[in-house]
Image (cartoon, rainbow, N blue to C red; front, side, top):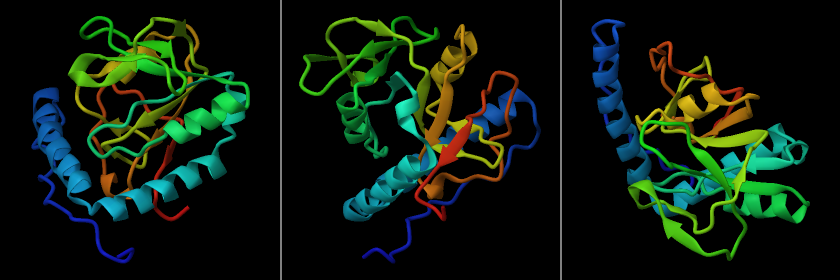
Length: 204
């Protein structure tokens, strides 16, 4: 039922210190707990809350202002934004998916539209079969966790941080995730890049 609470695996205590080894270990444990929380949510309820988050995104951001929009292929219970991407294409915009071309390097964004041939990339995530590099002006970025300062906790590879930091012109970035991922802090480090906006299924 809609009123059912989100399963809440216990989150670890804050790191003992602000040094990177302590924070990194805390992030590993916190990431596991938050992904477990997300995957443990009843599928129908996760879908309902995902739809609410998508609606909040569309209310908060005029995506048509971006000629090219970078999105993501949803995995591990992430909010599905492919319908939003298809609508952007229908308005005459372009859409691109992130592709890891080299380990621990900025990603490329390859042109995507529904029905094109796909292959499997790093972590077995679907990517366009043909490389057509685009440069998005705006990015919808998936969240595992996040804090009030708009820092995101991702999967730990640092690919979005590297990509945004290396961009000739920084794209405008909105993080999209479930309110259950809200944290007091992710204990940001010098390499962490905050989002311009965070949107969830929570109070809007």
